Image (tube, rainbow over all chains, first blue to last red; front, side, top):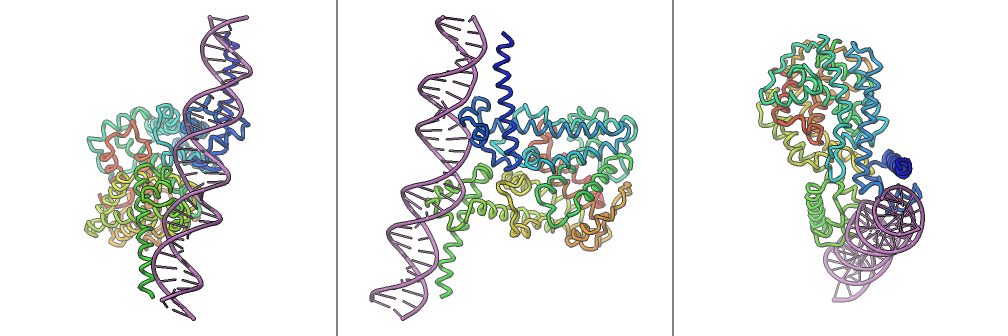
Amino acid sequence: MSSSRTARERVRAELTREIADVARRQLAVDGASGLSLRAVAREMGMASSAIYRYFPSRDDLLTALIIDGYNALGEAVENADAAVPREDHAGRWTVVCHAVRDWALAHPHEYALLYGSPVPGYKAPQDTVSAAIRDTVVYGRIVSDAHRAGALNPPDDGHPPVPAPFHDDAARVRALMPDVPDDVIVRSLIAWTGLFGWISFEMFGQFDNTILDRPAAFDHAMRCQARTLGLPA
Amino acid sequence: MSSSRTARERVRAELTREIADVARRQLAVDGASGLSLRAVAREMGMASSAIYRYFPSRDDLLTALIIDGYNALGEAVENADAAVPREDHAGRWTVVCHAVRDWALAHPHEYALLYGSPVPGYKAPQDTVSAAIRDTVVYGRIVSDAHRAGALNPPDDGHPPVPAPFHDDAARVRALMPDVPDDVIVRSLIAWTGLFGWISFEMFGQFDNTILDRPAAFDHAMRCQARTLGLPA
DNA sequence: CGTTCGTCAAGAGCAGTGCTCTCGTTTCTT
DNA sequence: AAGAAACGAGAGCACTGCTCTTGACGAACG
């Protein structure tokens, strides 16, 4: 009976995946606002109402695409990190930065969906969270690896002492980078948000007419951030 | 004849402004995707087709709102900066950071429109540029003021030398912060993108369930960035 | 003063959207 | 084999951006 049930469920799973695939292609072309359930149904040769058997609403389809996007980016980051020797922490950071940027450039609309303004009624279902932090998990491991190897030496740049109220937040972040002291956690947050801030500026047009040699600027900026974070030069 | 013509044009300008105001209120409530020309017309008690006499398309209305948003943010930043003694460069930086964040928190949908993913068919008309850089102009003045006052002392943190290809881009940025050397321009870009990266993370949900004491974390992070930039502690 | 002409609001209408409901049909379960 | 659950298709609702046409108002000119 499990085979017969799975027969039904298999075609359902496959159709669900195909709908998501078609939707992702439309998303890549027209962006989130151009994603149309009816167009997806049309391209698949089925009635628009049938789509609702698989995705209860347009937002649910979009949420599925968001999760897929997080996973795709996370996987790209994981692969990039895995290709660098474990002890080369600075190299791992640099390659992760480029992995994020490359993925963003290759999938602009999906990047906008993940790190731009939240689109729909903008609720972030809990399902997204585990996928959303895959890249951050990799990043946290790089920092804690470097710290435990004694390779993390933040410069004596006169950063002010970490304020007491931040301690609880730091403890939460420490779940991703064990043993790392508070001040390094702050530096990590700055570097990480700086990475996405830079890429978002580049993707969303803030660098237009100003920063033209994007790869050179990005690479240099991320190496500077590595130093401020405490990674070796 | 000019009086009569201006009479006509005056009511036209006023209606244009009123449409934009109503639209901005809708934008603030429902976000960019919830902005409806018909709803605006309904609220104003006029036919939807009449709106098109004032804004040729929905995107044009949105563009007008974007320009208004840039100006509002720019003005907030200008006022914040003006309230601090000219020589207190670190204080000016900090207050500008908080001005941007406060404005973003007060106008989340407008911030998303300006610094989130570009919305529909997305093109940024040239009209937006001059308004878009008002905040950046203030920032550039702070940096160059500090530099010329000899108050800018970047730490010896081992940042790599600025690569040659970046020289042209640095020259363009230098239009906003005269006399500033290339390496400080890089630090300025990192700090500026870091500011918006941090705020975007906060606004778009990346800090959810992790960073809870947002004001403390933000304030500290920006003070750290000030030091890395070279501003006095 | 009367006429012409440009500006304007309104209405109807087109093509498209997300979504719901119903109605037969197919498929699985018992 | 009978009942239940899942499914696809179609019609329909309320909504959208946008266009086109019609008719009215007000200003300028002869």
